[in-house]
Length: 499
View 1 (cartoon, rainbow, N blue to C red):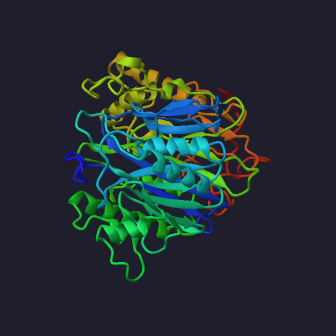
View 2 (tube, helix red, strand yellow; view 1 turned 60 degrees about the vertical axis):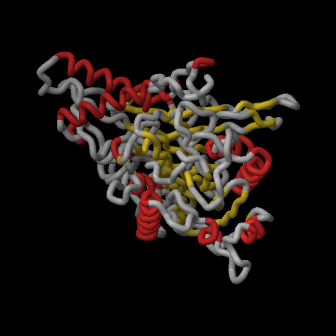
View 3 (spheres, helix red, strand yellow; view 1 turned 120 degrees about the vertical axis):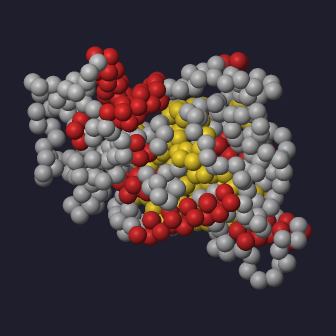
């Protein structure tokens, strides 16, 4: 094992899934917080479907692999310096998140596929969660996993666990070197948090898993084989104990919401700071978050919410749907540096570059205003919880002593309006509506009205942890109401115009 690959290094991630009847709606709901170095930027990348010539090669983060003839369209949330992704979804409703894990198995020396590369490859090559699992395990057997997972001269390596979901079920895949075990989830809620969690309930495994454990003296071959017990480190470092605490806290949060889990509930869990799920410590923090709703009815569209900014408790979850007219949003795409990128030059990561995208910069500026102005989002026209722990002034209102502040605030508002209103949406599916400013200059939050066949989504003045309207008792989708008529308590289209 590389000396610098210790689990004592500060890192964490948490993935969650709810499969009916745990969900309040007839859908599988997926969620993940990506916890990475606090200054690392995550971008949201849309990659269209493609066809590829026989014999094509594909450059991943460190190594090349053989390309397949056809790849599916994907939306990815990824650290902007690498090829793979921390989490993402494809056009067929497959979602995957990965996490770091350390086991008794030594880490591979040298560079291979990162777990994040395996995640993207699986999304591009699968139409179901189970097929994605087979893609990952096949690539793991052929190419292995390895290489530094941080943009830093000191290598930082780990094994990987994955949570894979589609419209009907989910799988937990936990790896140790090229070996692996998998667990199928056909109902209920499940979470993973930087530790092996598959015990004796193994749905599939590497054919050499148990014989390897016996050969290493980790298992005597007697009794029921417990994967987590056999392969977990004998003495857990402090950081791994913290991961265990997060895992238990996440499991309890899911248990409390059994039967009532919605996208809003998942966003609330991702924003939970007390448990450490929403992380900010030791040089690491939650740098991006994602929630996906995967309806069991194949005629309904899957909807994916991504922050593209750090700290979900002070970020907006922006919706994305695959469909005609989808294109890359430049505001959430980091700059590129070509052959001079520190990940491409050898030795790697000897220099640093500024990878902040437009939304990231705007988010930083907005947080600065929140922290200095101490005016609530409600006073600015935001629904409760849209940026639920932050403070912000409304542009154009009184109270500013310098024109520069007012101008800066207005620029940020206009930036966010443009990004949230156009960038991440399929124009065929989603339109933004806004109430025109009143004579006094008061800005009102842009209302999102979707033309999905199963409902509309709008700004909420009552949601605790989300800007998505949630009326759990009124409609099976929790955050939706019939498209044929207005919401019983509010007509979103009244006095509105397309932005």
